[in-house]
Image (cartoon, rainbow, N blue to C red; front, side, top):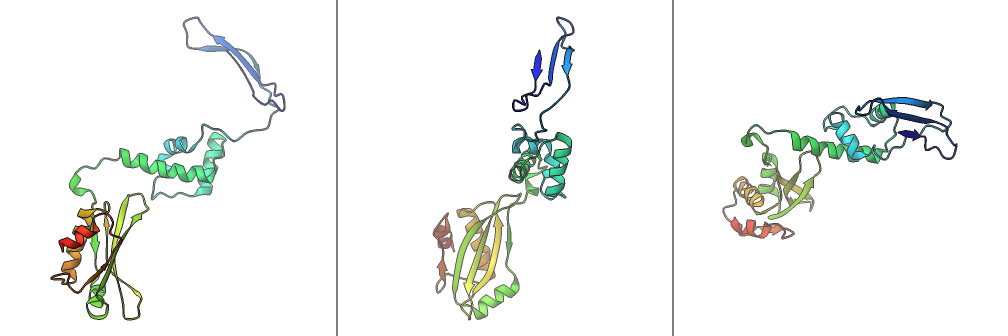
Length: 214
């Protein structure tokens, strides 16, 4: 078995030649070694990509840890003599989150977070006594370790400004989650029926059906 340095520009003389110690052995004996390098050190390695970083440094890259970009880059450079880009590290953090999420066990499905609904009394009373009877409904993605979606209800106050009424964090935006949210909202705002209330929506993902339920 023979190996040589690929420093073609400098014609680096480093080389090694070895053979098996015995015919049926997995051990090798070095016969010839030229340990002199004339090529510059290279800190780029195509195998040291974001996937490799996420597997090698899963604990260090996990969400909520004491992660500092400069310290992490210095550690990788010191141990493996490679210099990953910041983009690679950010991608590795996302992949590490997925690895952790796939490997962590939930002892009981009942203990797993599903939804939360929030309607502050001050917001409730403000809508009942000082806002127009308009309710806008919409949703957006929650960009965090735990994938979820944010549902919210807003209105228009006496100064024509946006007025928050309530919000909820749910597993996803669909008919069931909207129906659950609107049922709680109806109870908080004492809406015996929806007559006289103007709902503004994008008519997406079960909203029309959910409004019809109340």
